[in-house]
Amino acid sequence: MEKEEIVRMFQTINRNICCPKCGAKYTFDNIKIVNSEDNLFFVSLRCDDHPPVLASVVIYQGKTNDSIKQAEITPDDVIKSYIGLRKVKSIKDLIYRKKTRR
Ligand SMILES: [Zn+2]
Image 1 (cartoon, helix red, strand yellow):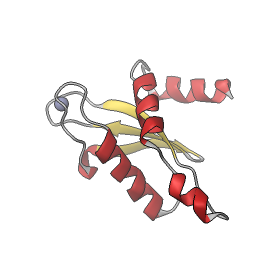
Image 2 (cartoon, rainbow, N blue to C red):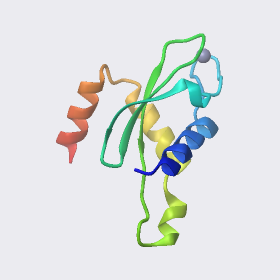
Image 3 (spheres, rainbow, N blue to C red):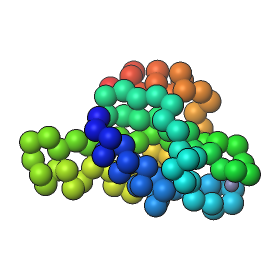
Image 4 (cartoon, rainbow, N blue to C red):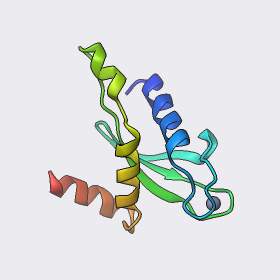
């Protein structure tokens, strides 16, 4: 994972996800990567006034094809994952489920 891609992931989160309680945007300081597996990242999003939420982000890397690079994370992917994972109780539960689903 290249630093540039991590930064782009943070930018995408910042643009597309906000606190479900108050609508505040998540600044880079409030986004923490809690775990990663290949191109799948679990992030904790912290609002100053509310409990953190978990989200998963998939990074699509385009190593050989420049056109794939443009695609990477779509807002829909992020939001879909975000909505789906709000019900997850713990990170372990999250990772276990992801592994068994594939
Ligand atoms: Zn909030």
